[in-house]
Length: 462
Ligand SMILES: Cc1cc2nc3c(=O)[nH]c(=O)nc-3n(C[C@H](O)[C@H](O)[C@H](O)COP(=O)(O)OP(=O)(O)OC[C@H]3O[C@@H](n4cnc5c(N)ncnc54)[C@H](O)[C@@H]3O)c2cc1C
Image (cartoon, rainbow, N blue to C red; front, side):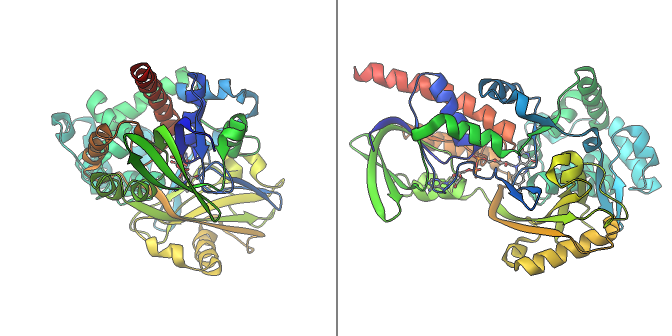
């Protein structure tokens, strides 16, 4: 392998989008990926007429960075917008699917909360701002209880966090993990008023909302991988990053063969635990801070139902489960209701999610046990009269990073340690947002910085 100026470890959306941006800025990156395919958590699998997403079900298409990337990849014509029904979301409470209220009027009418909980939740309209406005930190649970009271916190906001992060609301930092929620309080003083403002804005601007592609989300990462051609090496594990007389060196393994690559810049676009392992010999500080970013496991059990098998066919985006329900099931995406091509005509595909911070041990159950659990919990909700016609189980041992209290300080510590290691960079979903649009935006920002610093270093060396 030839020596390159910028080597990127990891071909998830973060590493691939970074390579795309670096090339647009005139650099020639090389991407090394341990797996036999590119895409990382993004993987769309066609099986028996069903299209199963192994990770994300869709991405928000309104972000300018996403729109720019889709234009540059000529993917606009491949975009599949979510059905209007996807705006309907449910929470499982007292064993039933209940629509999530999205306005003060719906809050007054909802079955999700009793009269006292509703009254307390309306307190959000008059309460002042909390500790975040003074630079403090708050967990999602504390924030939600303070604004809405315990009832609405547990039935509306906690499920949201288990939906996004599969996390524990008592541990997750609201400002780091759900910044838009913290911003509603800062900007509008009230979550409800802020939420309404955002809803009206979205309607006025005719936003695109949730999108995917005709053959699933992997079309995006496949297009990025395709344009890289030989600049992407699969089945290539980055084992170590060290330094020899100022020059960065990568210890790389391809099958049984090990080799060393010298380079001026390395980007670890890896989950934080893998990044920590790679830099262990380079810096004692970095593995400590990287290793302090926890990850939780998530299992997806995709269930396909034949026509007529469900008394109440799924109609909406899906549901999340309130914390006072039996543990195990985090929620489900009604995949074929959001994107109809995900299942054969008149069939339904439901992607259940299990595990997370509350039940990490579930990842070790067998496929049969996981299927049994998912089917048992889904059957009363959708009125299933038959067993599923199709089952696909997908496990992620380290599915999602948890932006727990202290996350901002940990990211600052990574930045500070990075300062002492010229040419070494970290990106990926472990640091500054885990949605696909966050990864794409962060990649674009980092590419600008790397291009600037590599150009400066070249000028200095010349
Ligand atoms: C179940 C689930 C549902 C989700 N739902 C959504 C959603 O609906 N919308 C949304 O926007 N986001 C969603 N996300 C989040 C989003 O998918 C991820 O945050 C994003 O895909 C992460 O991309 P990444 O490139 O940062 O990391 P990854 O995708 O994890 O990529 C890292 C890559 O590094 C490789 N690698 C690891 N170690 C090495 C090594 N030593 N050498 C070389 N390569 C290595 C891995 O094989 C992998 O390909 C979901 C995630 C999960 C797990």
